[in-house]
Image 1 (tube, rainbow, N blue to C red):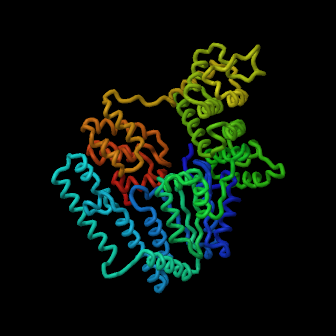
Image 2: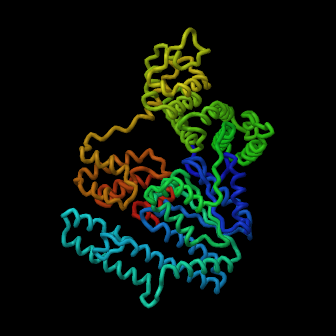
Image 3: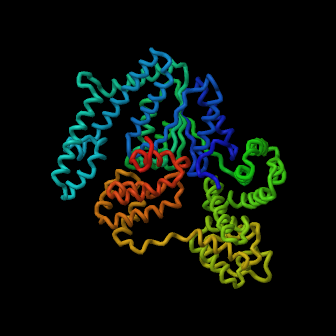
Length: 587
């Protein structure tokens, strides 16, 4: 199986796009420049960023200062704008440490970030300020404040608020010295001036990669873009921003209270000077992608050689160049099993490039193949004679239809009454083909193509082991019998919570009894167990809120997290778990 995350290897011929971006970022006549890498979820935006980063590293002594900023990582813990500026200042401090004069400038520059942090703390007066607490410290006082507003607050809660207020006052004084008369316009001007002077002193370019912006809430996404525009867009800088264009436009509309469509378009056009889109993946690209995946499993030592051949062929495809499974298998010195897997890739590629709900999306393709390999492993463990191609064809049907259509397919196979007539293309059956089941009607175009996809299902009876296995894998985990209605409702809500600071999440947990908290955590863990931990896992924020309210629930969550491979975990989730003390290590 394969890790479900961005790759530093080019499996999809994205190198040419990466080279274009790297060339733009290194052209001093074009700086400052902002480049957008647009594409939907799973299309390979993060992979393009990694490829660009590798290209820029190849510049050796002339390589720019490279900074990667994951906006989603800071969501819920920090002001994204201040965090972005701190990441930049830390990088410049590190780059300037060999030059004492330049280091002083870099320190002055870094010091101004504290001022902007302070502005962030006192800019949003609200309910917290009634208690003398800046919004940036409301997280720590949230439980006490919630109790007071709900009418259940105690004297201890009020004392906690007062203590937090005193600490907040001291914190602001530490950030802003009263003797220094500062104004935001002057600070911004000084910040930009020192930023430019440090870069000039280093005689280098700063290239900032911003990723996962489309995972963020609208205010965080727009705040990050505003920080780039207001503070950092200076000579000697290049910004490479990966995002789903539609999601960013939605964030703009949401942030500015749904302005006219032209305003939304104009805003993004002003921030992004050079928009580039991740190339659409076609059938030939998918063949190369799956060939690389299978060779990486079977003969990893030969992957680089195979990759070079595949990429060269794809880049020459305009001349009619292509590759075949025998050639690649021979190059990889592969086994008959590898050759068979490459043949399966040949069959899958055309329909995966076209099929609804897939349309060539490489992450979906990888997940589908992972599901197929998992089923094959289960089949082997149970001594079931099921081949990979059959499992793959069934998995494609499941992905491209819906639950009702899939269950109807299962019913036809398991009952075995003339099922072949529904599963074979017209030219392969005797007599007239029966009308499609009602559950299949809306997928008629896809199903007609799917019927002709190899292997042809001429014997429905032989499909029963594969169908049984697929049903077993797809079946949802049953709810625990001891789950009360209150706990059931809480679990459903906590699966949707997207911040550990969610007031709604805290209120839900607060309302649960001690017993319901334990059973709710067990059910949350079951829901997360099969999740993709290289991306955002639904339920993790709610589970952390629950763990903070119950020592028994916390112990169960920590025990579950211990068995996970943190090396393959999304950086934002890992940061979240370390920050909240759910896993060891420092954030």
